[in-house]
Amino acid sequence: MRINRAIELLAQGQAIYYDGPHSGHVLTYAQGRHDAGTWADYINVGMEHGAFDMAGLAEYMRGLVDGGPTRSGHRTPGVIVEAPVNGTDAANVRFNAWQFRQILGRGVHGILLCQAETADAVRAFVESCRYPFQLAGVDPALPSPLERLRGARRPDDHARLGVGTRGRGSEPTAAPVWGLAPDDYMQRCDPWPLNPQGELLLGVKLESPEGVANCEAILDVPGLGFAEMGPGDLSLSLGYTTIPRDPYPPEMQDARDRILAACRRRGLAFLEGCAPENIVARIDEGVRVIAGHREDTAKIGRAHQKRTMAV
Image 1 (spheres, rainbow, N blue to C red):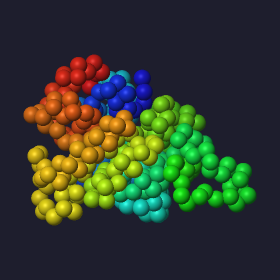
Image 2: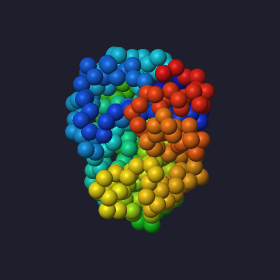
Image 3: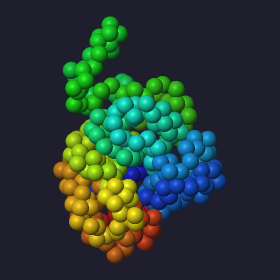
Image 4: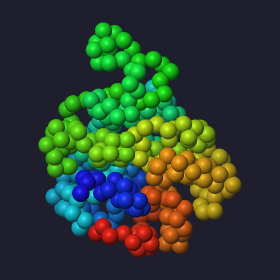
């Protein structure tokens, strides 16, 4: 059994279902104990627009542990945080990488990077979430640690991952949430499926014209597990003051189909809102991360896929 229930299910080809608001999430110990029995496969914690509350997140994770295990036998449901960082460019991501360190230090199981627009920004995101000793996907032509001690620098025209930049220090707080010793946590907290033994699920939200235009290059970055089209912000960029729903306007439908196709070619999960009326069709189309916050949608989808894991 894996630590991250969402990864365990995705590895089986199963769709996963999440619950949790994009803002206003109650991050308390009591809410964590309550949410330990959630019907969802993972809990979304919205910090892009919600409060960046690290003390609350720590208490919430402690409540999940004390309220568990889940009916599937996992220590906690997965928790994925929407970070406040905008993935517009690498410099912005690296400047704000402290946020990823703070979030991961509370023991969560994944992070979603919003407003992803360039491959360089997404590479910086993945690198910021990794320990430097994890080398899967790292460009072998980069200077070695000893060469870097002597002043060698990374070339600017890199295409593959650089060395991770997450430092030592948060494993004593994160490891107990996962039920691991600190050294074991550092081995396991690495992005899946890049690291087949990794328990960290990283995703990107493509919600601007630039993000859609660059989606193939962005999704080529090693270390990602899922992606979504963000219809709310993308529609704003296209001049819509209200969010168009299914069916989308032609330009948004084209963007959605392009991102879905890019995900499927790369073996990444695609996230989309679904409802009881369309969940079967969306699963058959290849959608694997289901938004919508409705248990009845999940029941229909799980039955359609003949899922056996307990909820």
